[in-house]
Length: 174
Image (cartoon, rainbow, N blue to C red; front, side, top):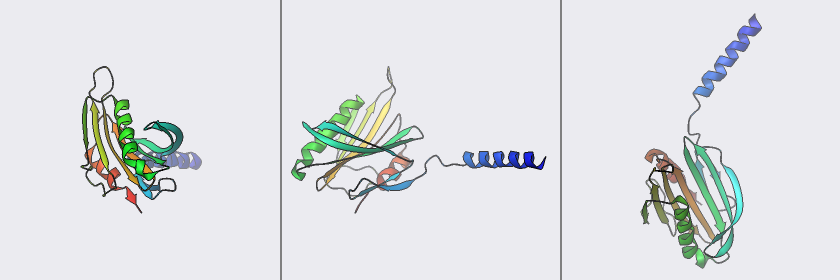
């Protein structure tokens, strides 16, 4: 009887503790061997692929995860010539925009709330209305540090402002 009571109590304790698990479990992680660290609200997976950007093949590493219906991602590539950064960043941002199929677009250098100053910053806010496909919002920043180029973005049907602020404020260049 005591064993059954102990087992039942253990199951209840695990159930209560898992119910209290936070939606966002923030953790700071390095982005490869670059000077960038990012704050993720979930444990990201890393995928590396060769992709065409600005008519050149680049090896792109992306760390991403999903929490509360929001995708959080940080992508990185190394350029052979740092002078290519502005054209690569613009082409990369345009490619992301084409992938979203946005109805509304805003491109600026005005950073999201909480974002630290970043070199060669390009900001994209895009939205696709519902209709035949699911509504989607994208908030992203593209920037360069020496020969490293980065894309940091969030995608969801709606992006919560407080979560975006935490995510972008967690970017650190050392």
